[in-house]
Length: 349
Length: 134
Ligand SMILES: [Zn+2]
Image 1 (cartoon, rainbow over the protein chains, first blue to last red):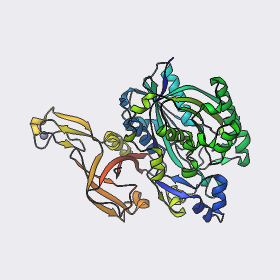
Image 2: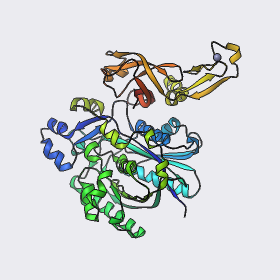
Image 3: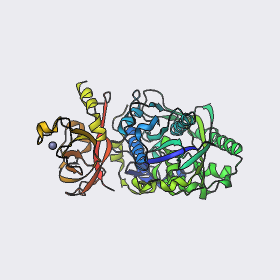
C-alpha cells in the first residue's frame, strides 16, 4: 500500500495573551464564571504586524527547518483561513514566495470557517496520491476577529500550523480521510463585513456536535476501529468544553484528548485549531501511535483523519523549531486597551 | 502605485534576505550589489547570489518614541543595527521583546512580519523583522 502522509510540520502562535477575566471586566461580567463556562483561561492575540500571512509563513518555515526537502519540490500550497489579509490576493502566493517554492506550483486559498486548513490537507493527499505533485503544503491559520462585547470575543484568537504532505518518508501515515458536510447556517460572515454573526445556541447540537459525531462514526466504521484503539484524539475546539463533551459522547477519554486540546490556554484559532492540536500531539508522539482527528467548520462540515505515527518521526529535526507547548508558554499579557489597539477595534466599521 | 512596484522588485530581499557574495574576496553584500567595491573589475562574473541565514547580533539600537505616521501605533519600539553572521549589517525593527530587554550583543534571528500597508485599501508589505534568538 502507498504510504501517504505527513513529511514535516510547524506551528506559530503569536506571543500576546489576554485573560478571559480582563475581557469580562470591561463588559461588567464575572470573568471567573465565564472562564469556567467556556473552559478558556486566556487567548492569543496577534501583534500589529502579525496576520494570517505571517503566521502561515512562520509555520511553513518551521516545517521546512525540520526536514530536508527542497522547497522547489513543493507542488501545491493551500492556505485555509477565514481571515486572509486580502479579500482578493491569495495568502498562498506570499507563503510560496517566502519559502522559495515559487513559481512552479499550484496555489489557492481555502475558506471553510474553521476547517479550511484540514480541507487543504485532503487536497494535498489527493494530489500526492495521483502523483501530480511530490509534496504539498497545507496550512490552517487565523487571526479571527470578534465584535467587541460579543460572546466570541472570549475565544477568537490567533495561530496556525502547516503540514508538508508527501509519500514514503512520512513521519505519520494518513490511513484515511473523509468528510461530512451539510448546509447549516450556524455561523457566517457576509462579504465586506468585519465581524461574523452566529446562530447563538444553534451553534451547538445541530452544528458542531452533529457534524463531528457523524464524521467520527463514519470514519471509525470505515476503519473498523473503536475509540479505545487510538492513543490521541483531536477535535475542533471552539471553546474548552465542546471538544471534551463530544469526545465523551463518542467514547473517548479525557486522557486521549488532553494533548491536542489548546483552546483553554490560547483560545480558538479557528482554521488553526485542529491543526495546532495535531502539531501538539506530534510534538510528543512515538512510532506506532494512532491518532484520530476531526475538524469542524461552520456552514457546516467536518473532516476526519485516521493517522499512524511511523519510525521516521525519530529522524525529524524537531528541535529546529519551537514546540507548541513552548509557544504556549512564551507569552506576554496585555490589557483590553492594548488588545483593542492590536485587533483594530478602535476603527469601527 | 510606485510603492507597490518598488516593493515587488525587492521581495527576494525583504522576504528571504537574498544578498550576494564576491567570490574573489569572500565579502557578502546585503542589499545585493552589482560589483565588489574592493575587487572592482576582478569581481566581474564572480558575484553570486546567496540566501542569508537571518541570524546575527545587535551592534547598536535606538528606541523610537516618535515614529513615522505609519508606525505611530507601535511606539515605543526598538530599531537596531544588526551584524548578520555572514557579515553585512542591516537595520531592522526588533519585535516580541520588551524595550528594556534589548541589549547590544543580543543574538537575534529574522522573522516574517507585516512591515506597513497603504492605508486600509492599499497593498500590504511584508518583510523581515528580528526577534531574540531562542
Ligand atoms: Zn571582492
